[in-house]
Amino acid sequence: MSKILVIGAGGVGSVAVHKMAMNPDIFSQISLASRTKSKCDAIAASVKDRTGVDIDTYGLDADDVPATTALLNQIKPSLVVNLALPYQDLNIMDACLAACVHYMDTANYEPLDVAKFEYHWQWAYQDRYKHAGLSALLGSGFDPGVTSVFTTYLKKHHFDRIDTLDILDCNGGDHGQAFATNFNPEINIREVTAVARHWENGAWVETPAMSVKQSFDFEAVGPKNMYLMYHEEIESLKTHLPEIKRIRFWMTFGDAYITHLNVLQAVGMTRIDPVMYEGKEIVPLQFLKAVLPEPASLGPTTKGKTNIGCIATGVGKDGKEKTLYIYNICDHEDAYAETGNQAVSYTTGVPAMIGAAMLVTGKWSGSGVWNIEQFDPDPFMDMLNLHGLPWQVKELDGPLQF
Image: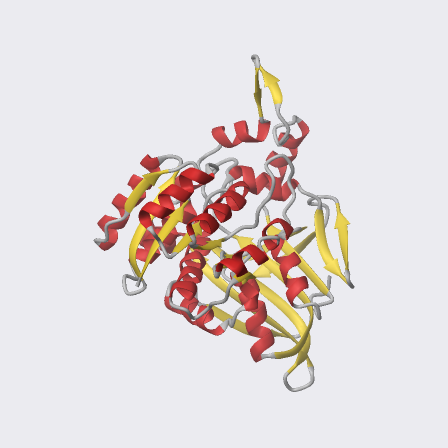
């Protein structure tokens, strides 16, 4: 039984808080803070209506380290679950150190002024967290998060050695909008427009953004075009499982999304450097975010399924080469019925709840900064099956032919 403070009141924060409230034997008191307290209040009302659990809400600028520290000292949680913007990770980590509180997030830090997704800023906190006797768990979402746990589960139970790993993220949902992103538009577009990188034979291989495309037939969704991208779990997996010779990340996008994105890029609306407009500086991408549909608003209209998983090829426990595909299928309408949020938020918010449960129950422990694949995958995998994200493993005839 533990007190938890969740920072961030978007769709992921909403799912995580709903799922925590459904597990009162683990989470005895839940607080929710965000820059916009009214968003916290709306989530708290939904949680109360669905579960009968009361959630304390607070207004908080998480960039303000003294204010965050003061709130932590007031609430005295055992763990902060950071579901705010990745720009705020380091400030929240600083506040946790100041207040002596454990830390967890779902996405790695990136600077506001450059789309650079790397762990070194957070890994640099290793000694400070270790000396403070605190745990910092990084990347407990789906990707990163579940996909990393999938990988270590396959290594533990099925492979003596993994040689190649492909992470496939498919959203087969349809929200009826001409152009909208299923999670924070600013973060989504920064990721998609960044140079693609994958790990191969001990080095990074770079390709232009969205320039490498393959088709894959996803169960429960059908054939989809997917694009090679960089994603942060490549960096942590190649660090903690250095045996893997090649790690790639693929994400599906529809033709309409690509067309809209190309136009927005061409006219400068995806720029992250400020421009002058009517005497003041604005960042075009932040303005675009303001006019696009709020991802949390897409829940009522989104239909279809997601399919996210990993395909690993290597030497099995029997000494023979094999290829295994481990994945989860999540239904947008089912996710909305349970939590009031669509499946993209659900598939990140549920693992955030499970990662928090791992820490507060002591199933995962240790002072310092940790990535999720550094812990025993089994208790996490068990909770996925119990809390809405069941997974399955299938053997394929052979490795991907691309």
